[in-house]
Every structure is written in structure tokens, then in C-alpha cells.
Image (tube, rainbow, N blue to C red; front, side, top):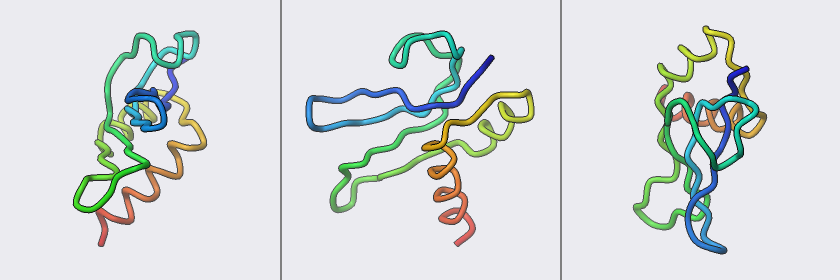
Length: 84
């Protein structure tokens, strides 16, 4: 089964997450099928906090991919920003 989830990168106490489509059995930071965007929870100033490829995410969901709870909230946030 394919899941869309966060993969942690960055330094200690400075997290940075890639939003990825990955096999459910793969490790959190292991092999992924496709990178769909990123999330930077500690962004300051003019830094970009969230960047998602919504069309690619919709494509994976159409193929049967499951979306994690955190990614669902990020997709809602990104879609409201895109609509505004």
C-alpha cells in the first residue's frame, strides 16, 4: 500500500520535512516513490513554510494512496492558500 507522509530531514532541533509518496512498509526516512513537496515548521521571515504539488497528491490518492493525518491538514492549508 502507498501512503503519503512526512519524511524528516534537517538538523537536530531544526526539522525540515519532505512530503513523499512511499510504500507503507518502508522506513520513515527511507526509500520513497516520489517527492511531492516540503514543509518547514520553523520558517521565519520570507522563508517558504509549505510547498505542495496538489495535482500529484490528487493523482496518488486517485490511485488508492492513503494520506496521513498531518499531511491531510497540510493539504487543506495549501489548498486554501492556493484559492486565495
